[in-house]
Length: 133
Ligand code: IDP
Ligand code: MG
Figure 1 (spheres, rainbow, N blue to C red):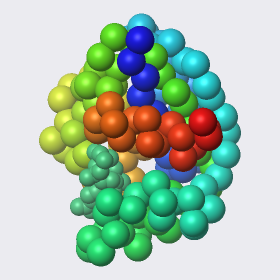
Figure 2: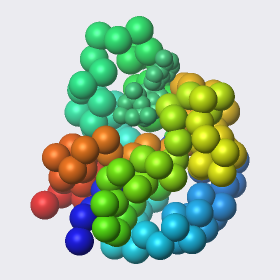
Figure 3: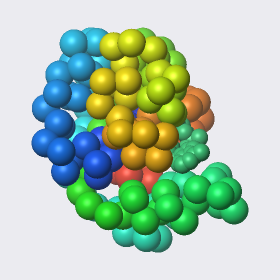
């Protein structure tokens, strides 16, 4: 069964909407296989988001992702990667479909409440970064 890496980001943990987001994940028939409350160090955030190094929003992204607690999750389902990307919606909540997590809860394109792996290959890498092998 396919797995993906999901994060509930600091803006959502701070606004007490972990439960609402987990309910959407469970209602969409994902199985939660691993879950932890943690806080990213600067080094971990830079490893996790290495692909975005040099982009205009990179420094802000690292500051945001290390600013408070996050929930890290390994989710399992058929086509988990694509299915979870569909559930979270577009990066910018203004462009996200109705009833997606980001449409309902994200503040803006920067503080967008959740992360989801964008490919099966990256899911494996991100699961290993957040949970080890
Ligand atoms: P994704 O989270 O939908 O996969 P990515 O392009 O991989 O989007 O960007 C990673 C994260 O960086 C986003 O979720 C968001 O927090 C932040 N980000 C992306 N693009 C922008 C932008 O144009 N301005 C500000 N923040 C951005
Ligand atoms: Mg991405």
